[in-house]
Image (tube, rainbow, N blue to C red; front, top):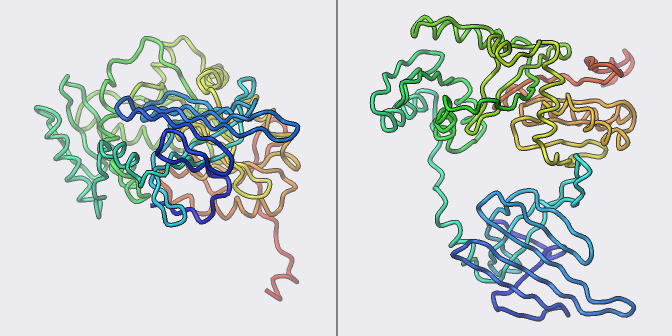
Length: 409
């Protein structure tokens, strides 16, 4: 249960249709069966001003984007409201956690702000909405238990999976005869990071893997150098069991210790582009970074900017393609006016992209501290920080401490 100590910016509603409180009239219409709602807040006229209205349209748990109208200002809701139970002044409420951002379609990078709408109903509405959610299963306690759970779920899901288990992972056959390799390293790293329902997520990513669209979008991903070769080594090991002839993935150098790979964006996951697939797409390797960046830019409606420390921003776009933002010039054209000096970036994990200015010494120290734990994350990339030199990224080496400071510290 989330506890709110002070009302402050929260909107508190009552379950009655119309209630007056603090001079404002709240009109609440909730359709529990259709799972959508309308909140309208009308404030009385004040001297010299007309009546103000706050209107919020909610939809859950679909992905429909809603809006928030405050007076004449319309804000956007970037994602489906999360239904929570909150407590205000000892009273339990049904709450809706919103991600609110400016409704400015001409901009790509928008500031992120959270807001909670709380309904004073004893938490009944939140309980009814969450009653249909799948309960979180207990996390496996070790790698062996995770492996057994995977094998059991595969056996339950497919008629004759022909499962083969090795130290690297699990190979199995789906209902259509397609062969899949499941990396236990990746799955166990995500379990250790606290992710729930990892098994279901992995198995869903294989569903429909062979029914790809004729021209799926190709997006860029920045990874640690050697990632492509590591995947190729795994493929060779699998080929020894399965037969077939593996081929390397397409990758290009990006920065010291980093390389850029390319993936097809599929309905239930992603798959890396190999050399033969690049030829089939009639693309040259030199054209691929710009081509994939253009595709990603068109795919992303908005990128959220979260201020995580003074002068330090985190960019997020859903958890999969954050590192691909490094290839989009329009992103940095919007961000650079906010930075103190040339940009410095950190990519400790697949879903983490931090940026600050080179003149922000405290911000750089903050980023180094958070990048230092990269190896403990689910999809680690690098502990290094990188500075933009006008044409590419170079490693930002920590400043050396003088012998005098070392002597007295």
